[in-house]
Image 1 (cartoon, rainbow, N blue to C red):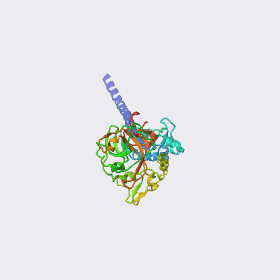
Image 2: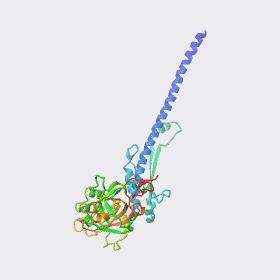
Image 3: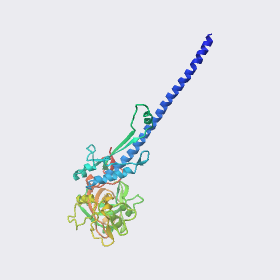
Image 4: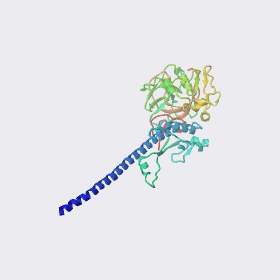
Length: 416
C-alpha cells in the first residue's frame, strides 16, 4: 500500500514539474532576449555617437581654419567650411551624410565664453575676435530593438533613442606645418621673432632668383621631400608639408618661369586658356595692391580683410598686358585662404654672394601676397604680417598641433 501511494504521488506531481520547467525556460528566454536587445541597442547608440563625433570633429577643425581675423566675413566662411566637412561624414549606420544647421555651429572669443551663431554675431568687431568654434550634431529617432518590445506592453511608451556629439576647435601652435618655398631673408644683425621687419612692411622681388632684391626673399628648395623640386606644384597647391624648424634648405637656382601662372591664380588672375591644371581654388579676393593704388606701400591688410568680405575680384593692377583676365566675384566666393601664406625665415647673406650652401630655418613668417605678375622680370610684392605663430598675423596652415611651447604656425586644433 505504501509503495502504491508513493507511485501515485509521483505520477500526479510529474506533469506539474514539466510545467515548471517550461515556465522557467520562457522566463529565461525572455531575459536572454532582453539582454541581447539591450546589447544591440547600446551598440547602435555607440555607433551613432561615434559617427556623429567624427562629423563634429571634422566640422570644428574645418571651421577653425577660417578664424584668422583676416576676413570680415570669416564666420560665413567658417560655417561653410564646417558644413562641407561635416557633410563628408556619414551617419545613421552610414546611411546618409551628416546634416548641419546654422545653429549647430556657434562661435566664441574664449573657450569658456558665450557661444553664439553666425547670425547672432552681427558686429564686425565681434566677428573678427571669434577664435573658438563649437559644432554640435544630433541624431534623433534612432530605432531601438528593446524599446520596440517594451512599447508592446500595456501602458508602456518609451521614445526612440537620441545621440549627440560636440567638438570645439581653435588655432594653436604647431610642431610641423605646410609652407610655400619662398623664404624671407632676415635683416643683418636682427633676431627673432620679427628678424628686423615691421608688421605691414612691403617687400619687393622677382621670380627670377638672380634678380631677387637682396635681403628680402628667395625661392628655396626643401630637402628630403620627393615633391620639393616641383615648385609650381607646391605654389599651386598647399605647399610643402611635414616641415619643422629643424630643417635646412637651399636656394632654387635658375629663372623660374613656370611659377607665374600658379602665383597669379592664387589671386584669381588667369590666362584666356583658364586656370592652371591641378591648381587649387583662388583666394576669397583677387584685389591687388601696388604703389599706384596704395601709395603708402605699407599695411594694406585691413583693406584686404574688407575686400575678402565682398569677394572683390582683381582690379587690373598692375597692368599685365594682353592675355590675362580676372575671375568673377562668384569664383572668389567659392575660394579659400590663399594669399596669407606661411614661409620660412633664413639667413640669406651667403646666398647674396652667390653661395648655395644649406641654411637652417630660423623661424616662420606670415606674409600677404600683394599682386600678380605677367613675367618673371616683373616686381612682385609681399606684405610682412609678423611671425606665423602670432594669431594676429592672419596666417593658418595645416600640420601637427603641439603644446603651448610648440612655436610653429597656427593650425586647427581640437580643444574639447
